[in-house]
Length: 122
Image (cartoon, rainbow, N blue to C red; front, side, top):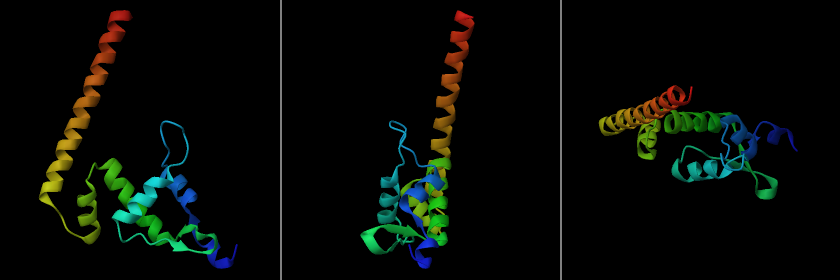
């Protein structure tokens, strides 16, 4: 590996950094990164020998932001695109609030059922 290539991370290394793991088989989920490359033009991997993707620090930071906005904030792909371009979407903000409210209600419902089962069987 050349000195230039050492400054970059492979797609597998980036998947580890982002903790992108397939829940079914426990393997790294690199296909998510490839999908995001197609959706977000800000991600530009470098292709060196062997046609392998390598990501610089800037691309990794963008991927971290995309991951956070999609997975933690519940934003849509379109909303994240707008966010990366510096736009704010009231519609997407409303969708985020709705998604978060649904997530909270679902979790509360599960917790409630667990408590009932514990009381019943405890």
